[in-house]
Length: 228
Image 1 (cartoon, rainbow, N blue to C red):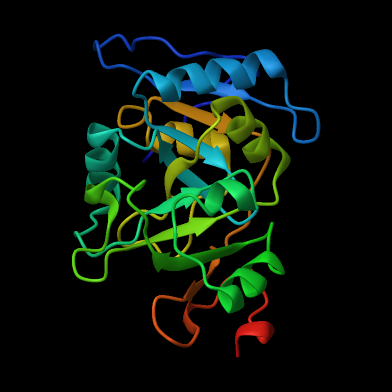
Image 2: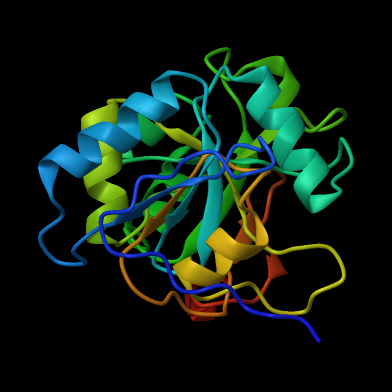
């Protein structure tokens, strides 16, 4: 019989297990008024090369700093991704998003009208994006601006996008929705879990703007009517 460990206590910051394995730090963050000190601690970890799990307006996500090669490799290993997977740059604002992807006028208007929200847009990347993040043939990357207080607080403190991928484990149809369960399942493969309450089970809607017309790659939490 598989025993479930107890939910971590609010404020628990992780430690080493009796077997010497590093346990993920656990941050309990207020969903409407994130504690600035806690947000700062999470951002310090990201800047220091850590891989974190954090909440968004669709699902929990795996995230690390933009140039973190080890973090990218760890995300690929956890999710069993190949090199065709589109990573997402989670951005604080539209101005920040525009530094990393090419936007013509029509695409600019369509994305502007849909953000912030549960959408990921695939676009041709600028030279600001590290090559290891690009689709090997299309030279594209995913970008999005979430409508989530805690995510926005992390992004504001970090001052740059978080390199992210939806936390959907191999062989599972739905993502994990509770921070304490993520802490239990991924304790030794991520460095921190940020918990501000349950996230939904629907990932973002993905729209590919890399060709002449918008292509709906995945229907998720966002309304697709404007892209039909």
